[in-house]
Length: 276
Image (tube, rainbow, N blue to C red; front, side, top):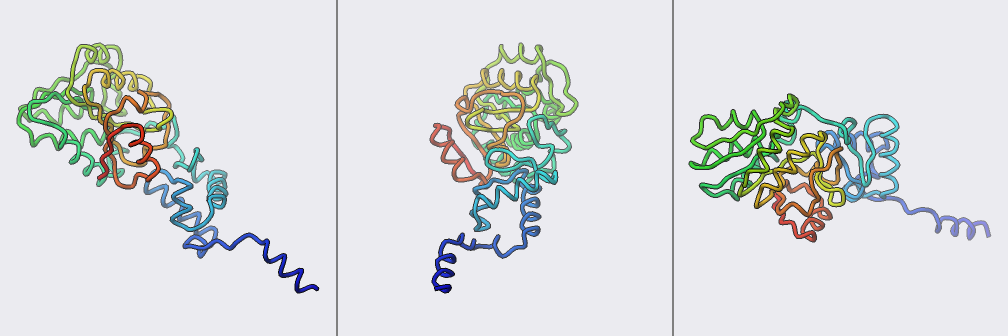
């Protein structure tokens, strides 16, 4: 009788989790999750569950624990590194070394959309700076930008370079404020390359600075083709100030680490997607 009772009890026990994660010690698994976040800027519950072969419930418990320890900051569907939340506004120098190989691939794909003689609008940022360097293979372009460093980067070319007026944001080397917005209201560009800090299909495109978001919005309105250029860590992430809805974007160029779910959602929103 006891053996029958024991067998029934065994039958209703939770199934043992299989996969790489189940072979790790708990602390080892959590250190692995933090290392991934440090490498990519974020981690997603679904991706961790699939790659480690353990349940989403276990992953959520790990992320909750790591948040209590101050190692990660929980978000819907995953977690970010501390300081990468809505108010975080890292300097251009801090961003320069992050995801550099991805930025080079994105910039190479971006310039393939440009034709000789066009007017190209460049937002400030490290990815758009990489695009500015890649544009030097052209002979005749008109470049409009609010980034002082990009204007300096292109100063040795034969391009016509128009720098918006405005107040200098030393953190990003960008010009913002009414002067920049007014200048952009009178401009028309063939193509805009827009870098963002957050890209959420529900909330839209976001950036940490309110004045920067207003200038970016004016750029979108001034452009016939709007191309968002950002690495995959910027997706499903929200910063403080909204620029525009995701539907205002025509094309996204990002790296191949983008989740399949996000890629499908972008395409279902009639946004052209290029993965590099």
